[in-house]
Length: 221
Picture 1 (cartoon, one colour):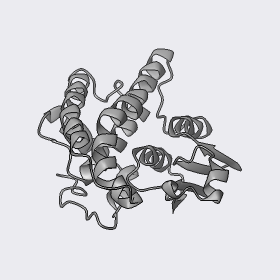
Picture 2: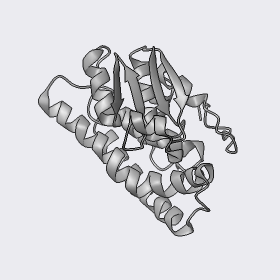
Picture 3: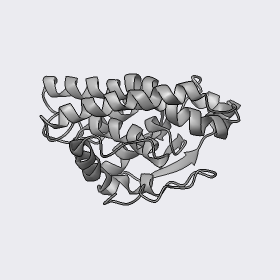
C-alpha cells in the first residue's frame, strides 16, 4: 500500500495526490500535522515538511522529486514530455508555481487565512493578505498569456506543470481567493483539469472550521 503523509490544503501534497491519481495508483492518505513536529514524523522527514510518501519500500520527501519518481516508476499516462526542451519547460513551470507563486501568493493567502488558525499561530497579517491578493493578478495574467499560445501550460499535452498550478489554485479556490473571470482561458483550463477523475478526491476535501464554498466542487463553476 502506498501511504502519503499530508495535509489536505497543502498544494505540494495536492500535486502528489494528482500525480498518483492520474496514474491510477491507490494511496492511503494520512493527515500529518507537521507543525507539531512529532518524533515519528521527524524520523520520516527531518526537514519537518509534508508531503512524505511511502512507496516501493522507500520513504520519499520533496514534492517535485516525488512526482518525478512516480513518473519514472509509472510512465503511463505520461506527465512529462519525451523531448529535453519540453521537459525543461515543465520543470521551469513547476518551479515557478512551487517557488515564486507559493512565496508571493499561496503563503500570503492560504497560510495566513487557514494554516495560522489550524496550527494556532495567531491571526492573519492583513498586509500579507493584501500583498497576496495583488500578486495573484500578475500570476493569472501570466497563465492567461501562456494559455493564449498553448493548449496546456507547458505545451500541447497536460503535464506536471498543470498539476503544480492546479494544486495551488485549487487550494486557494477552497477559500474563494481566485478570480476565475479575470481570464477566460485560465477558467477554461481549470474547468478541464477540475473535471478529470484524478481531481475527485481533492474536490471531496472538507477542512474543519473552513466549509467548502458552494462553487468549489461544481464542475461547471
